[in-house]
Image (cartoon, rainbow, N blue to C red):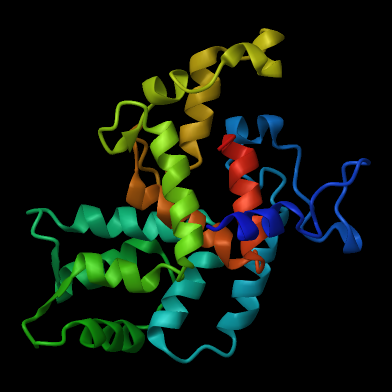
Amino acid sequence: MSSASMAACFNYENTPSKGGKGEKGDRHAPLDMDNVAWHRPQSATSRVEEELIQKSTRALASATDPIDKLRLLCLSRGASGILGLGRIFRRMDDDGSKQLTKEEFFNGIRETGLELSHKDAEELFEKFDIDNSGSISLDEFLSHIRPPMADSRRAIVEQAFRKLDKTGDGAITVEDIRGVYSLTAHPRYMSGEETGDLILNKFLANFESEGVVDGKVTLEEFMNYYSGISVSIDNDCYFDLMMRQAYKL
């Protein structure tokens, strides 16, 4: 992002005023970001997530394309909906081939509990089975279901991930976060209400979905989560500012 763009971002109209609220009805006023990353990434009070759920649910009524339908069904569950879909389909790939047969694909759709009709599931599979081989690329499928993000947004999300991935092994763990953040500044730690490990695990739990808790967050999972958040934030500069404040970039 250029210096001019950065200046524009940090002059964004909904940047908090001295009173702590944004302008224009506080529609996307940033939260108190000092502690937000400890509890839930960004929108702990769910203002953004609630907008995402409502917007996606409304859009479902007129959606006809099966890709759009599946994406909206995921987003109607909130920002972790895409994350959950990705995790389920990764589990379907037992042999690690990154290919899904039609049976695996249908089983994955059923396991999500998303109300996608058999007809739409058939059409969706056929869209991705371009060579009529009877299998589809898992990576290609998930990349199309994930809401598109501008390059600048992807870059800031990747920057946040790299900061958290202290060991550089491609996964965020409790040990990584412990190496980045000082727990002594967290109010619940200071008061003795919660242990350091509990606070750090709460952060990671935001990226766990569909009952899968492995204590590790990959870049794909991190991106899947923020692609959901991104949908309800129209302004690129606000998204950039929000990420920078949340992760002190």
